[in-house]
Length: 216
Image (cartoon, rainbow, N blue to C red):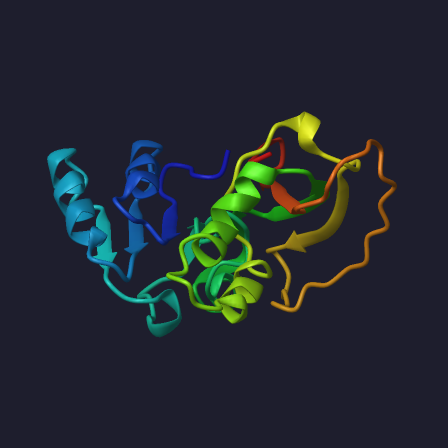
């Protein structure tokens, strides 16, 4: 949908290079693959093994630190992690859109919609608090426990563990300037009895119009 023969593609957070390889497979003339970690060395080997080393230029750095010899027609950025708030995701995407992408160029992804619901998850909750409640060597670890309980982390729950309906609480448009300060107010109606252990958050994404996924 986005990469055409002759396209210049910018892949931010290329990791082991799968998006850069796909861009070449779809006809990209040139790919700039950016990755700050040493995984980029593996990406170089994989690109060579698949015959694309001449079309992919690997740059080990943060995208905010680099300049390109030409702007990209398509920008792919996989910087979100479990949720879109990972690290300097917003700043990196905004900077690259302004400096490294041609005006009107295509961004992947384009939009995220965040959802939230109150959840009853005693076993998942226990994995967070047990180190401070049960395995604390007899010390008072409440200061650390408080921080852990107010920090998001990865977890899986079943739909029947939701105590409320899911509500959308933010929409992130990466094709426009975006602030890292995202806030909203949600009012929930409890739909079944149970003990609330936390707030479950997930996102739906639009990669390009008509193509997307959800980590729900």
